[in-house]
Structure formats: structure tokens, C-alpha cells
Length: 203
Image (cartoon, rainbow, N blue to C red; front, side):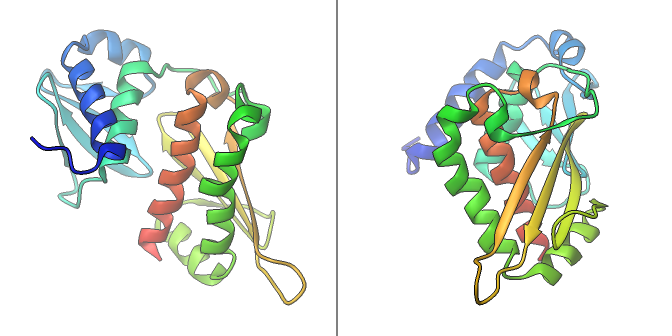
């Protein structure tokens, strides 16, 4: 197959190959809240369940809705291959406060914080409606704020402040403390991307 989008298809192909050698029982014991029925893994991402067949990769949504885009599928493959169950101690961390956060803060700011600010801070009512449609928990912080379960027991919050004539819109994304040990820094960036894109799809 000719690769048309190297940025998305090359990493996906790499992890799809690694996935063939994954031992399902090991993954279920290591990863948080994943089921295996002998043919498919079942993973819940932002309130939707996806079935992922093994060893030959295929993905379907159990609600018969659309499957996620390729970067999200790559994230799910990495979750099954590399993540681990880590207890949440009830505290929260910004991206910068977690390992390697300082090194990745510049791309993270552009891909996640600035994008969230100008996607949601300019349409706060639509953001609220979309978050509530997704079943997110309402927060009292910011002009609008919601808490989401990304995958397993990993939680994320988005806080949004509406822009005005004097100040541009602003946003903050924070992570449950178990992200620090459960995900690599690049996956935390992608998690922010996925959350923003999913909320936007409900707006």
C-alpha cells in the first residue's frame, strides 16, 4: 500500500505490527479497565466503547457509530501496548508538572492549550452543551469547566475562560496524577488533542 499521509500512517503501521505480537492476557493484567473475550479487546474512550480484534488489527464501535481517526487509533494501540494501570491519588497535575513536561511544553501549548482556548473560549455555550451531551462532570472553575474520563481510570479536566475586548480567550487542561506514570509525555499531548477533537465533534 502506498503511504499517502506519513505523519499518521507510518506510526500507525509501526504499532499495528507490534500489536500482532501482544499477549492479550498480559495486556489485560497490565492495562486499566480493558476486557478481552478471546477475539477482541474492549476499550472505553471518552464514553464510547471500541472493540479491537487481535492479532489481526481491526476496530469497530460497539454503538455502531463511526470509528475514530487514525491518530486516535494509534493512541489506543499504544495504550494496549505500553500503558499500565496506575491508581489515581485524587490530585491533579498540569502538563508542565509531569515528567518531560517542560521539554514538550511548547508543542503542547500550541496543539492543546491555544487550540482549546480559541475553539471553546469563543463558543462557551456550545462547549457547555457538548460537554454535557458527553456526560462530563460540571466544575465550578473557569467560565466553564468539565471533567472527563479519557480511558480506564485516567481523568482530564478542561477549564475555559471567554475572551473579551481586553483579553483573548484562555483555557487550561489538567490531568489526574496517575498520567505521570501511566503515559509517556507524547501520549499526554495526544490525549489533549483527542479530548478537544471529540468535544468539538459534539458542538
